[in-house]
Structure formats: structure tokens, C-alpha cells
Length: 367
Ligand code: MUC
Ligand code: MG
Image (tube, rainbow, N blue to C red; front, side, top):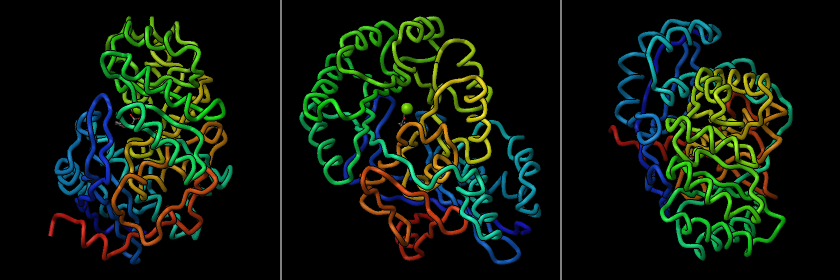
């Protein structure tokens, strides 16, 4: 399993409808497909979605760091030498999506070599997850219509609602409209992507008290340190750290500092290896987790469900696994299918999905 070559292939697939949220907007999947090749002829692959507004990475930056820095450090290692590989990758600061794609592509290789789905190698707790759908900014009517269509078509009954606009009433009205339209049986939670101040967040939570939210995520910036602690202390539901806690050290700091009481795990930024560490921390410290979405395509979503289904605490809540539905196309030979509100983890060896060479040829932007 000697690693002989790494590719970083930038590609662009338009969304049918862009996703808007407080920290940005995504109209195209401008991602990077990372492929790791072995001497024995195996190829592992994973996806790196750049999110400049969250981590500072860009599509060209990911290609550059993989080709110019990581490839030289990783070529020549055996795919089983994962700790050594991580020690080398982590000589470079930051670049979470690039590092994670290399990590997951190597797990993909291991699964293929050993004839096992990665989800089993990671833990094999169960074989599927309930799905939560993320609703981007729009009018109350449009968001309620989208939620109804997603519920009726895919059986999804958990929705994460993007908030963080001003005035707060814009979003309060949306959440109320969703509750009124969808009824009491659906689960609703909100994600502010740091758009509000602590006091705006507190007012919004107060106005939404009777709506019955189950989680609140990144309503204000964690860097507003005291305001954030004050908000979290008064929050009646778990307060999820997402972009404020993207490494084990940040997770520790934010939880111990009282700036969050739950953690979002995203394989796009912590791969499989560091996601295991984040999960262990959350378990050790006794907080809940949610499998989050980095606005992933189907390859990224396959990774999220592979990790999520592998562990007991990650299936306690629905995972954010459905936003690929907004894309006009994708790279896989066999599309992921959400039915009855659930997504099964792929069962083929490795990550368990295959990139369609024709689709990659069509969407790659480097040739
Ligand atoms: C999320 O949970 O915040 C939006 C921005 C980002 O970085 O991830 C998404 C979803
Ligand atoms: Mg979030």
C-alpha cells in the first residue's frame, strides 16, 4: 500500500439554487477531488470543499497545498502508517479541508485493501442515519414550501434553519412559519453563523421560546468571548459550536470556557481521524454532538454518513446529509438516495462510492 501519487483536481458544479447564510453564499460547488494512488494500483478519493468565509481555504489554495506540500510528505509512506502521515500533515498549520481529504482518501484505500466499508472500520455501530435538511435564507413562504417539499419527497422531519439576519424578526418569522406549516412533529433548530450579537441572539431565543427549538448553533461570534459565555449560560437548549471549534484544542477551549455545550462534527474539516478525536472529547466531557454539513456534495456526504453511522453518539441526532440535493449534478456513478428520512452508509469497501470518470471530465476545470 505504498503511496505513489496524489492528485488534487479542482472542479465546479453549479447549484440549482444557491444556499445563503449569515457568513456567505454558495452558488457552485467549487471543490477539489483528492485522489491518492498506491503502488498496487488502488486509488482512494475524498472531497475538499473550500469555505473561505469559515476557514480561509480557497480552491486554488487547496490544490496548491496538496500538490506543493502534502504530496511530498506523503508519497513513499504506506497507507497503514496513518499516525506518521498525520504527524507530517500537521507540520502545516490550518488547511483543514485539504488535510481531511488526504486523511479520508487514505482511509478509502485501507477499506478497499482490506475489503471492508470504512464505516465498519470506524466502528460499525449501525448502518444508517436519520437526515436533517439545512434551509438557507429566503422568505418565510419559500422556506416553508421548500421544507414541505423535502419532507414529502424524502421523509425528512428535521430541519436546521439558517438565521443571523437583521432585524432578527426576519428570521423569527421564518421559524414561526416553519412551525405553523410543518406542525409539532418536526424537529427545528437554528444556526446563526455568527450573524447576530449576543443580545440579538438572546432576544431571538426569547421570541422563539414557544416554537420549541432543539439546538442553537453559532448565533454570535465565539470571539465575543464574554457575550458568548453569557448567551450560552442562558440558553435553554444545547448551544452547538461549529466554526468556533474545528480542532480538538478549540473544542476543549470552547467547551471548558462555557462558550458551547454541544459540538458539530464535520468530516470535511476533521476527516475520519481527527473526527474520532473530537467525538472522544465530546464523550469524555459529556456533551452532545451533531454530524454537520460543510455544504458537501455526495462524496463528502458519504463520508459524513460513514462516520456518523459508525458511532452511537453520532446517530442520537439526525445528521446534516441532504444539501447535495440542491446541486444540479454530482460526481458519483450511483447517486446517494435518501428514503424514509434516512440515508444508509455505503456498504462497498472503502468509503464505498465511485467517481464517474465522464462526470469528472465534464466538471474538472484544470484541463
Ligand atoms: C453550517 O453548519 O454552518 C455554512 C457555512 C459553513 O461553513 O458550513 C455551512 C453549514
Ligand atoms: Mg453551522
